[in-house]
Image (cartoon, rainbow, N blue to C red):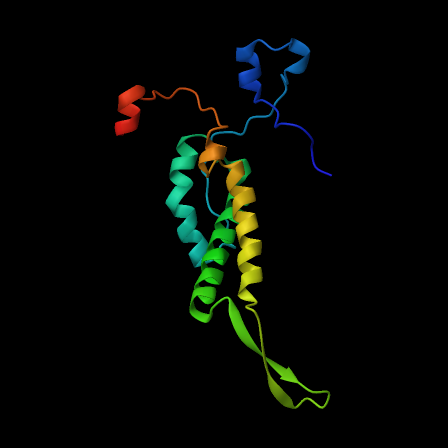
Length: 160
């Protein structure tokens, strides 16, 4: 069973809110500011995904050297999802499967779910799960707090 209740507040937010000192983790580890490089095992398709967002996420402090594997897993899941979606688009969600008798002779065909749908569903779940950790959906991004940024207010934010 996973953790229960809402996600814990970040330590910096606890300090700002004036939480009790015994509830603030003063020993929270912080990664060093180092270069973030993609792992060698990433496929070409996953590497393309890596390069689309890695720079922005690194600048914002969301992607650090400690997060490389999780972000690489997200990139890999996006690449696998794209491949599965292409197969489903080309072949359809419902395909014909051969039916054989006990002697191994082809006796006909039956309609069934395309096997690529299983890969698509699994990759979708991984994309959502890992993407949430990096704030890659609007609802997840609303949970992140990044300090030191000048944000346009009111009309400027809507027009930007």
